[in-house]
Image 1 (tube, rainbow, N blue to C red):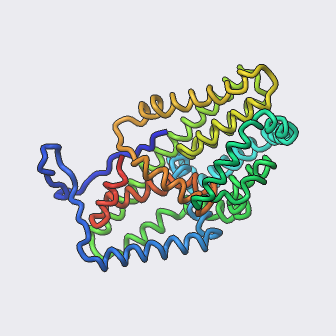
Image 2 (cartoon, rainbow, N blue to C red; image 1 turned 135 degrees about the horizontal axis):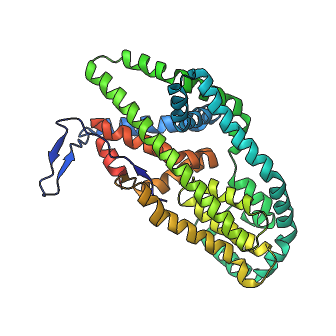
Image 3 (cartoon, helix red, strand yellow; image 1 turned 180 degrees about the vertical axis):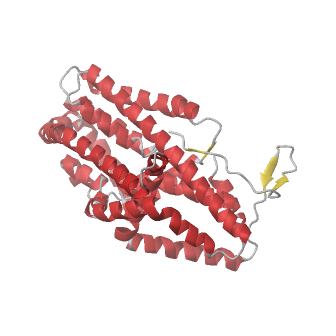
Length: 371
């Protein structure tokens, strides 16, 4: 799935000709004092260390900020029809909760059934692929000799539920701080503009005030459009996945449609995990041997069609974030915060790019993040 953002507007006088006949590029100054570079690196490391240590506090706040960008258009729509902002914010949050509770109620029984089937069928799946055990063991030994270690990988393969628990480590932070996240979200929806207004008022001059307002408006506009568009596209991917799995005779296709919907919020890594997951679904499902790879193959075809054709067509005439930056952000934030970090990685990277594009000292970094 490509990651697209609207092209940022440049202030007058901030562009110059690049000298190669390729148009104009904004001025991108680089620091020439080594002390500035080293201080910037140390400051970044200190901030990242604080984010890791204070994850129980920071992660709900960041999630509330992203949800605020997603729900803000609905609150403003209700405000236009003369619904008070507080009531509109409460209605938007209740709608979000109803969607999650409804999906959880609908999927609890099929998910429990599949978990039981996986535990039962796992020895049979291991027996089918027993011929790979010796080559994989030799590969692991060679990698360990090179310094690459997998820790308790063997125990994970013996217990499939441990694999899921390991992958989704960190989601307990969100579950345990759900009330905190919703409370912050409510106050951001109601009083976020007031907080921004007070921040602008303390800036020293008019140009900085105007730039701060412009940056905040661009972040809200671009990220709201991106999140809404991606949510709709992912819903279509989930519906298509459920339909093809139903046609293949796989039990509980709605469950796997919702899984595909959620996985598509994590670019690159989510669909890759989805292919492996649907391959396991095909192995567990009863039927001929060719049916084992059919769910994974159809899911991969849907994702390729979405990522290479549908999403670029819908998000046309927009600049893309560098895929290398996307994959590095996904890996880093998953390491920092688990699955919630991977989900929030792209929105945080997009916000970083918008801010870097608009601030002259950071414009070179914004250009580096551009696709």
